[in-house]
Image (cartoon, rainbow, N blue to C red):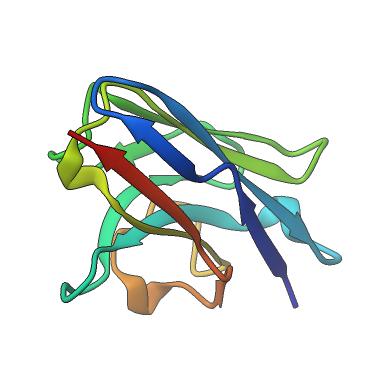
Length: 125
């Protein structure tokens, strides 16, 4: 069992930055691959970024590539999403998710077993 809690969301102007955190708890939290997803009002949840259990590989949605960076600190059982050059279209609730599916990166929501409650990110234009 893994419990995930996101934090760091808020209101920021376009062009600004935010760093989201995802604190994981559980016996084997550091062995899970992690991902970030987001959901805007009236839209389906979409993949943002993913990272392997050891941080060795990452993968990004085209819409955030070169602006967002996913990382993790297994000693702290925490994952991060650094978001730079934010745009109004980045406004959404951001969720972190964990999976023991395998050793890769995963970008389908169905591949994830555990989800946090989400944190709101609002970018004003």
